[in-house]
Length: 403
Image 1: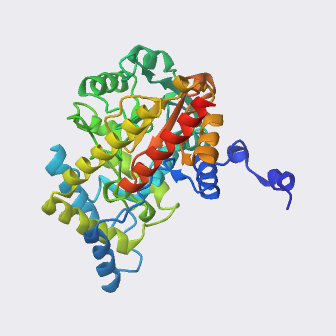
Image 2 (image 1 turned 60 degrees about the horizontal axis):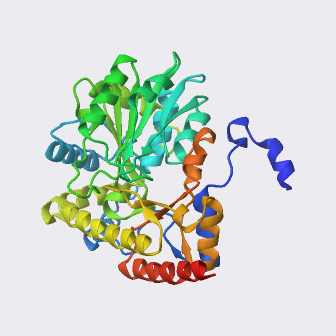
């Protein structure tokens, strides 16, 4: 079937979607044997205790459908995690829904809560699924940009948020720690957003999958725990980010029973339920992680990896911007003479042998210029891969400078 013929069958809601930038850059990296610092997945083994939990669950024949909203053992474990680390006690049976990764949680929440014609505020640069999910629900994305300051930190103008609100605004999608900037929103910033949400009666969909990856002494705050926010906030979590098992696709949505009921009405028709043995494995892993102090060990390891990559980018002539969380660093490429992020990332992958992601993929048309002089690099990689990338960057960019 020709692409022209295939296009006639496409629904309007997907016709404007192209291939994700992650697929394009990963394919290019494979073709040119580049060190892939583009897509954010770890290239090192998952912890043994996590894998062993999955093997044991399968051996015990935990292999049939489970409760649609989540295996009882897993929702109990998530509730205990929230109680221990965030001082909040969600009801495991009514206020937690297990989803196929946080990505399905995002999709189900938007499908369940956004009506055709509603506006949804999205802070940019954004994870690229956000606007796509809004469009598929019949909503209209409205964008408010983070802006880098002279100090390399990222700032959100709350008055700009207010100006973007219309009578049709239904939801605010928040991401903290923030992909791709690495910004960790402060309590004061979240209190400002909470006040706006309550003033305009907005639902907040808070993507917090990097909640345990914060650096430089920065504290992660949950907007759902602020006064007046529990009833209007859904929080997304991810075992993939927590344990480096992104292929397991185990995520969860935590929030009020009313909002979770809406999510479940969509979720039951998307996967019905999530892989049973992997849910059991994550439940066991959460208990083991607490006993072993795993999450703090992981955080320290990723902070060190961040430092390796930041130093390599600076030595190669780029200007890394501040990143206090997540897997990612955004770096200015204009000190190297580049002003086109797509051309730079393709050249870097094919010629230097290091793959990165052009950040314009994470901006709306109105604000793409903000991303053109940057590139996004992921540091969730083996030390050997980061060191090899550093070598290639130094040698490849030095040779370009000489040329």
